[in-house]
Image 1 (cartoon, rainbow, N blue to C red):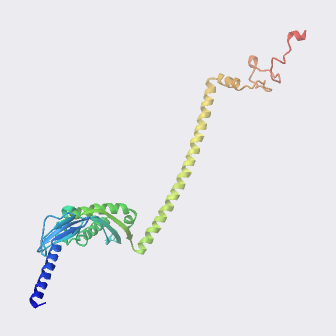
Image 2 (cartoon, helix red, strand yellow; image 1 turned 90 degrees about the vertical axis):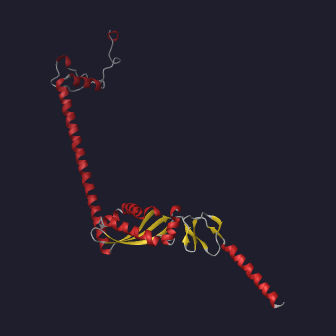
Image 3 (cartoon, rainbow, N blue to C red; image 1 turned 90 degrees about the horizontal axis):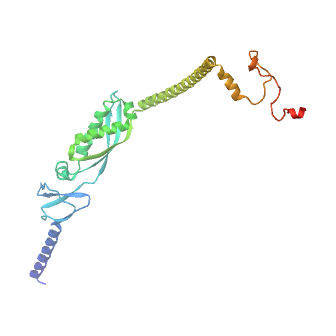
Length: 278
């Protein structure tokens, strides 16, 4: 093979190689859960590319992938309480990039907004909330601190990003402060138990007093009723009589009201008839 033929072969091979490379660089694929940002010679297109396959200018245009799924990032916030105690909070932030902010986030924050946008705003929000509360309250009311910090962080970040949640994974205090808070909580629990025991004693005492007053009032009412209507006693005697004559009668019972001690149960079967006596 002469030099001319070799040159044609190499030229043809180079042409095929260039065509293959050009074809490969003239298309793109945006992965699921992403949006594409088109950049041509350093200029960012204001319209993002949806998921799927597409064509672009070879060599001079790139399509960068921007994640729009929910993301999770860890951070630590060093705060101070209102009583000037150092509080270190381990935080997990859940966030996502909305479609409307895909291009601006890529252009302004190089596609990763956490370090430059989210992290400082969340830390600022936590510092503002903890500065208004004592270290003890911060530990005891973690859910309230989390809720307020989330609202404040959302306001500070604005609509560019969506902060789904802020999770306070751990709140660390100095060892001496932790011991002091623990001792105070133990004292409060003991005081609460003592108050409960005292309340129980007071309730029992009040119950006894109320019961005694009720019995006294009942006795007074019964006595008043008997004084005003003595026949009530006779009615009770008749209602409770078991059929036997009493062996003892009171000295005040005389005349027709006197019941003679017959000494036994009065029965019509044991009474002899006149026919038998005859």
